Length: 183
Length: 183
DNA sequence: TCACGCATGTAATCCGTTACATGATTCC
DNA sequence: GGAATCATGTAACGGATTACATGCGTGA
Image (cartoon, rainbow over all chains, first blue to last red; front, side):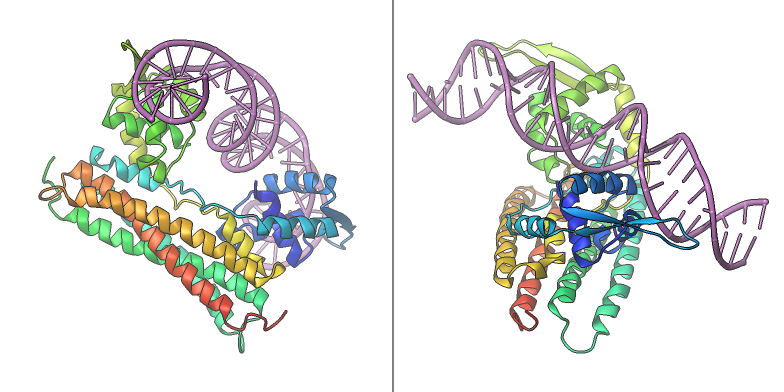
């Protein structure tokens, strides 16, 4: 699976401890591939065994020591090779859609409340993405390729959340029309 | 997890065998919650143990016998209760975005090829959704609530794929501009 | 003193994937 | 004769989630 590659991807940008990685996977990369700290620590052990990363224990005053991981040449090659493999569209797994699919089983008002709550959460995500976007846009001149790649993944989130909001509105409108036509 | 609820959702619409369910989860419900036949059979056993569904063995001439599952009262109640629980936005797990995030590690032409392949696959999905949409639109008069709920989940897919295509185009354009500015 | 941030892990359970396994009928 | 469809499962493995577990330093 791609968790290992996602870790290699982060490490290709800078050497990190497990703790640092866990933070990255809760924001930035986490916006499109999330992972808990337990998963990350386990995966780091495996990747080291495979020789794709190396550890260096860093002693810190007034802080616990940390293990800093970095890519080996083999790790970087493995990452590049993986990027070049074709990938299929990510399957969607969305609880809200399962609920709406059989939404007629609950009162429409309840359905509308659920959708409104979802809408608000997606709105908050969009706001976060747009704040981060401002930091990219503040960059003087054209973005260098590495940053531009990151920016484009963020744009995907913005597109996604924007279209989700549009769908929510369309759906709420549809559920408002003739709300009791067949109950 | 929601696999059990997704199964209850399908069974709430009509009694099904494991085989029938597997087909539903490969299309229709499968567009937003997929599952393999192995998962389904395992889950059916559990749901029956919990008393949320019942089996009836149906003998068929010139076909293997089949086990037809249907919701019990308890199952329907459990489903309704689950629908009413609030749910958080589904996490995104998209390999392509991980790849693009570190896309600067491979030649831009390769990145563009990857994106074009993805674009095409999303286009095909959109075409499928639009074909199904036509069947809903052919329905005379207003759609009854149950069908409308299904239609609205399909609309979500249409919104999603459309915005994905727009993002792909934006991204391909961005990668075409100054393609060698910093390599 | 209490909560939070830094830092690392184990254990149990559950979910998901891949491979293996069988057997009848129908259509080409 | 061979492939596809109907129909059901087991087994092994790997990925993900939840809970448990520890311990220091800083700042309110």
